[in-house]
Amino acid sequence: MPAYFDPAQPDFIANPYPTFKKLHQDTPIFWHDGMWFVSSHHDLTTLLRDRRLGRQITHIVDPAAVGIPPRHPANAAFDMLSDNSMFDKEPPEHTRIKILVHKVFTPRRVEQLRDKIAVICNHLIDDMDSEFDLLEEYAVPLPVMVIAELLGIPEADRGKLRPWSAAIVRMYELNPSEDTAQKAVQAASEFTEYLRTLSRQRRVNQQDDLISGLAAVEDGGQTLSEDELIATCILLLNAGHEATVNALGNGMLALLKHSEQYIMLRKNLDLVPGAMEEMLRYDSPLQMFRRWVLEDFAYNGVQFKLGQEIAFLFGAANHDPAVFDRPDAFDITRNPNPHITFSVGIHYCLGAPLARLELQIALHTLLQRLPNLEIVEAPEFHPAFVIRGLKSFRLRGSG
Ligand code: HEM
Image (cartoon, rainbow, N blue to C red):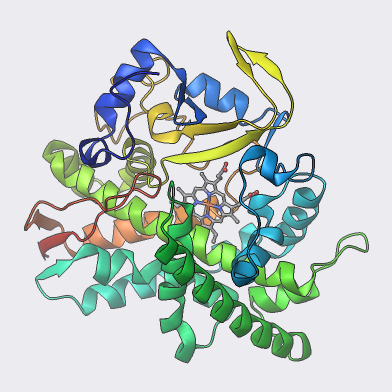
């Protein structure tokens, strides 16, 4: 294990990329703190497609044998979400749920949101003063409003979504505290009850929204149970929210720190799609995902054993010099740009088309309306590694 690797260190959290660079040179696969870490682009893209790894292990191994603590009845609301969400499942259950959700969450439905997203972005900018917090006033409200619209959450209830989502996703950090767990369970319980009532109403009174669609969807006699429907809606909000917020925050920080790239982009907004891909690569909002080893096997000189965990370092793979020329340069014209920010394999992000649409419109609208943006004060990152994002980002902007 390399002595310099410590994901809890504030310096690492502030900027993990120098450490990733050393890992690429020294040891792309290593054992640290009870699990394997993998950093190279080739190893991530190979192993994330390997069916000998999976998100779920308790279907083949006693949880206690792999260090999973016994379930506590007090956490039932949180556990219900994991038990019924595609995110935590493997085939055949994963395939069944993902196919059903895909039938409703279609490219057409995403495309229908295009005008609505532009309207939301423009309204948010209309409400800004010349000095504003890009996160609180733009990046945070946009994805919640879009997902609320997509799901069909009534306007009066939309304010509850962000606090629920924020409390639940804190559980995905390494070693969450007892307090974090309690708040996550409370949020999961309230959110579940809310959606149970709403989905029952939509079953009776169908509307043109995702909740109604998920309630009615059928494929070869298969349907979603009520718990699967609830877990899917919560997953869409959680997975779709924090990552989009931080992709825009981290991406705008990178853009504004590279003034020649920023000037090139605002002169030619046709470069927005490429700029957005580079933002997603350069400082990925989700830095790590894990898998269980489901059977013993050897890989590149390493012996993986049943029940071990592998942590995949997405930010490291996106800065792998074997794949990316000048990986630490921010280059909005980078082509090709085979980043894996949306993962690969069966758990590939279901919301990638929506995330890309939102980010492109958000970036385009911001640069069109406020082409003169300046950083007011240097922003700080949240003290967390897995979900990488800024605490706030104060900017000054004018037309
Ligand atoms: C920039 C924004 C986003 C990023 C970077 C992102 C990234 C990811 C990644 C890396 C995974 C797979 C994790 C793994 O392999 O273990 C994933 C899964 C997922 N994402 Fe996203 N995501 C984003 C936005 C969204 C949006 C907008 C939605 C939906 C509204 C969404 C819904 C999902 C779902 C449902 C899954 C689970 C797929 C499965 O397990 O098969 N994501 N996302």
